Image (tube, rainbow, N blue to C red):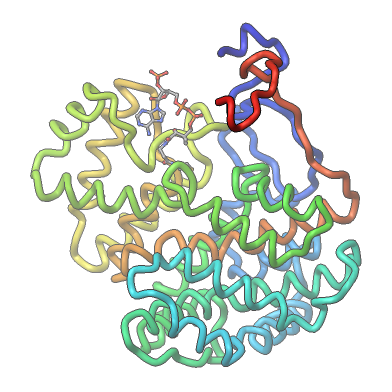
Length: 380
Ligand SMILES: CC(C)(COP(=O)(O)OP(=O)(O)OC[C@H]1O[C@@H](n2cnc3c(N)ncnc32)[C@H](O)[C@@H]1OP(=O)(O)O)[C@@H](O)C(=O)NCCC(=O)NCCS
């Protein structure tokens, strides 16, 4: 089956325009990304994650008063109901943190004061969005601690989403640099147009389902290694290369064997991922601070070969992997960190979808058997 046989068919929906949005724009020519018209690098450099969250959800950057109020609201809404904590204690030991997160958000819907609201009630949807975003960092940290047999740590109202996540994970307040890295990383991961998980969550709510169902859909879709799961896979790959001790040989062998190299390539970009350069800079900076630059060196070798041989470039998941590793974050939490950030993009898109909704229902080409007579069971 090929696109040539069926002119209107594009495998993987590549290049298909599936909607109109005012939330973010990817410029493939310049490899740049803007959230509501603002360059993501400027946000990563100069703003805390809450400013990006506000921008995506409310449509504009907050002023000082609005930011303070928003942070207070996030802080108030970040606490998880005790029933959710109890449910996390019942999760099987081997359950991946992304699956724990699906469980958390499945339950949280019914605790939301707007649970019964009309699915197209814009104000209720924005209120739900703030509650969803507020709880994500807490949910990831609590789920992890409980899976390790530790007690969850209550959020510190003095800290923002980035700082609180590190504090609730490790039990120590992070320094300014670590908080800045997490703020920037969450900002870079927050939103990216009609990517697979965002599109999936839009499809979900377009049936007039609810935002929490859309979040569960988004988490399930992000989990796969061709999407968000790539940051975890990239770190396991880097560790394998480190063990083998020859990054050049490993990469050339992998290419010769047609192996997919995690953290490289992108469906939209052709010359580079807008977010990767900034994350690479941060990853290398962390390496220098902690006195371990060898992951950055392996990365340099791989990046050169991948570009020279295949014109493939690192996407944001590649530098995020070793940046998180150097911050001492357990590898199975890398994709959940992506969730903390992406709840903002998912929610902004679901609100946008429901503000001007139409059921999303594409068509397909049938290539199965021609119509044949039904044969009764006793004659088969
Ligand atoms: C992101 C990704 C899924 C985009 O996929 P896509 O647009 O469907 O492109 P394809 O998978 O069809 O790849 C096109 C070609 O590039 C190659 N390619 C793409 N990404 C590659 C990678 N990471 N390593 C090796 N080869 C790769 C494919 O093998 C294919 O080569 P071929 O034409 O010789 O068969 C793909 O680049 C990938 O799997 N990357 C690794 C996972 C990843 O990092 N995901 C996070 C994305 S932000």
